[in-house]
Amino acid sequence: MSQHSESLGRQLFRKTWPMLIGVLALMSSQLVDSAYIGQLGTQPLAAVGFTIPVYQLIIGIQVGLGIATTTVISTALGAGRNRYARQLGTLVLASGFVLVALLCLLIWAAQQSIIFTLGASEELYPLVREYWLPWLVSCWLGAMLYFGYSLFRAHGETWLPGMVMVLTSLLNVVLDPVFIFVLDMGLAGAAWATICAFGVGCIIIFASMPRKRLIGWPDNTAGMVAGLRCLMSFMAPSMLSQFIPPVSAMVATVIVAVNGEHAVAAWGLGSRIELLSIIAALSLTMAMPPMIGRLRGSNDIEQVRQLVRKAVGFVVVWQLTLAVIVASISAPLSGLLTSDEMTAAILGEYLWIVPVSYGALGVCMIMVSVCSAMGMPRLALAISALRLLGCYLPLLWAGSELYGLNGLFFGAMSGNFLASFMSWNMYKKYCIRVDSGYTRSARQVTI
Image 1 (cartoon, rainbow, N blue to C red):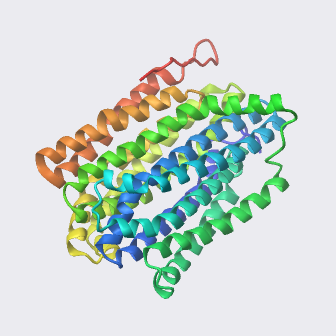
Image 2 (cartoon, rainbow, N blue to C red):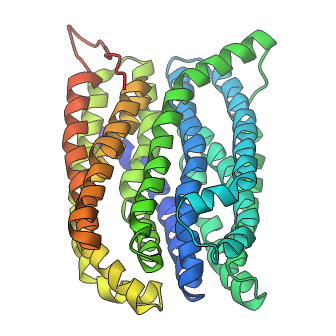
Image 3 (cartoon, rainbow, N blue to C red):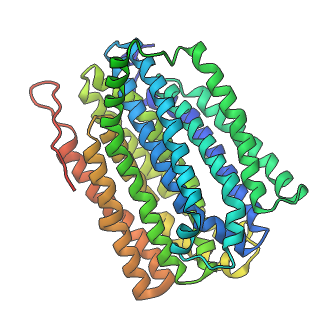
C-alpha cells in the first residue's frame, strides 16, 4: 500500500505500535532492573543515579547519528535513490562503531574525576568502579544495536526492531536475578545481564541486514567522503542537541545531590519512571522521521503538517491520562521499587508532581524530532537548548533554592510546561511555510 493511499493516522499507528511495544519492553526491563538493584540497598541505587547523566552522553552520540540516519536515508529513498541509501547505511555503522567506542574509552579513563565532580562520596567510588567496566561494554553494544534499529526504521521497517527490543528486554529481566543474586555479582551483575541480552539482539539485527538489502559498500572513495559529509551535516547539530540533555542531567544531579544520597536515589528512580512514562512520545519520535523524510523527499509538505498535529494531539491526551494513573499508584509503586523508606517517600512526592508535565515534555520531543527530520537540525538544537538551559534548569534551581526538594519537583514541572509552549510557537513560526503550493523554508537559528 502506498504512502498516499493509506491515511496518515493509519500509517502513524502502523509504524508506531511495534516501536511502542519494543520501547515499553525496554523501559520496563530497565525499571525491573532498578527494582532488583533497589533490593541491594541505597548505595547501589545512588551509584546508578550518578551513572545516568554519563549514560546520556553516550545516548547523545547514538541518537544524534540515529537522527541523521533516518533523515538522510529516508529522504534518499523518497527521492528514489535506493543504492545511495544502502551505501549510507554502511557508513552509519562504521561511524557509530568508532565514535561510541572512543567515548566509552574516554569515560573509563576519566571515571574518577567524573564521579567526584558529580558529587559522589569517596565511599561510593569503589562500587561505581566495579560497575562501570561491564556497564560501558553494555553501552557500546546497545549503541550498535540502536544504529541497526535506525537503519531498519529509515527503510520503513519497524516490526523487527520492535520485536528484538522485546526479546532483549525479556532476556535482561530473566538474566538480572541470575547474575545479581544467584552468581552473587551484585550491581555489576546487572550490567553483565545487559551485555548478554544486547549481544543476542546484535546477532539478530546485523544478520538480517544483508537479506533486507539495507547496506552496500560505496562505489569509490569520493562517494564515501560525500556520504560522510552528508551524514555529518545532519549529525553535528543533532549530536549537539542530544548532548544538551546529559549536561543538564549532570547539573540537575549536582542540584539534587545537595539533598543527600536518598534524594539522588529517588531522583534516579524517578528518571527511570519518566522514561517509561514517555514511551508513546519516544516511539513517535522514532516512527515519524522516516515518514517525514519520505514526504519531504516527494515535497508533500502539507501531509507533514497534518502528521505533526495528529501526533501532538495524541501525546497530550495520553500523557495526561497516564499522569493520573501514576499519581494514584505512587505509594505502592515507590515501595515496590525500593526497600528504603526515606527514598520511597521522596519518590512518592516526585510522582505526584512531575508526571503532570510529561505531555508538555512529549510535545518538545516531537518538535525536536520533526525539525531534524525536515532538514532543520539547527532549529532542533535551538528548541532543545531553550527547553533545558532556558526553562528546565533555571526553574529547577530556583525551586530547589526556595522550597527544597518539593520546590525542585515543582520547578521541573514548570520548566516542562514553559518549554512546551515556547517550542510549539518556534515550530509554527520557523518550521514549515506553505507559499503558492508546496514550498519549504527554514530560518537559520543560532544560539
